[in-house]
Image (cartoon, rainbow, N blue to C red; front, side):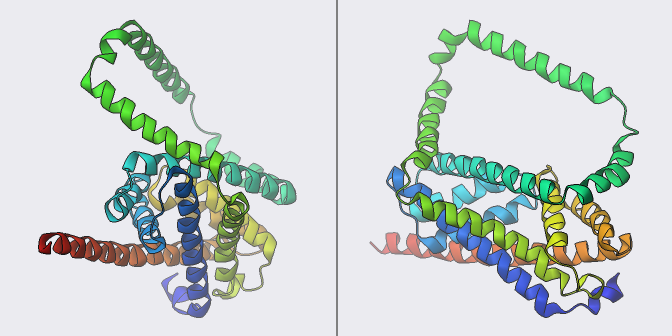
Length: 303
């Protein structure tokens, strides 16, 4: 695999990386659209740095990035973190809706390919599982019901706690952030950014095909399959979808005439190039934000 990767056309890999960066820039601009209705406007560069720091963190600990990106922007632009978390929450809801729409479109348009893939490849992998997981679900549901009942019984005492009052204040700011979606000044621009982000995700997969000889002739259908399988891998609570992305994409590309080993090589090139981009740009973003905060502190001390 390493020998094949050395023969890859890195020009197309850099083009795919560029598409990834454009998607993150668009995400930062879209985030700013959600901040304006609640009375805040972030510096676009700071928003981009925060987004990249978030992606950097997500590839270390799943879902940590949602908190770190808010913490970063809260420090640079003096926006209450609970309001930022509210906007990120609604952003994720919008992303989930778009993900479902895109997934449904891909599944319907590529039904025969995906149906065969699920029956021949995925089903045999999971068919050997036991039913033990169902008992765990019942335990979790039972625990949640007990906690809900205890909270209801002790509700008056809980309301007097300082922690409850603090949570109430944070929740109010969180809800203000969520309400921003209903007060967008330019909803069409928000939708345009959302479409552009997914177009860039597709472009990342598509342009990477040209970097590797066995996949160089693949068309948009293969790109849609990679987008579909890659989305499933990234949604799972695994840092960066490592392993799952490689397995699913590698197996999926077999449908288009390559061997699973060649599919795995493509998946490795695609995944590694995006991870490198995120880590490099993420680290640069950390340095730049750190410098901005240091300069602000120095200015305050001079005053």
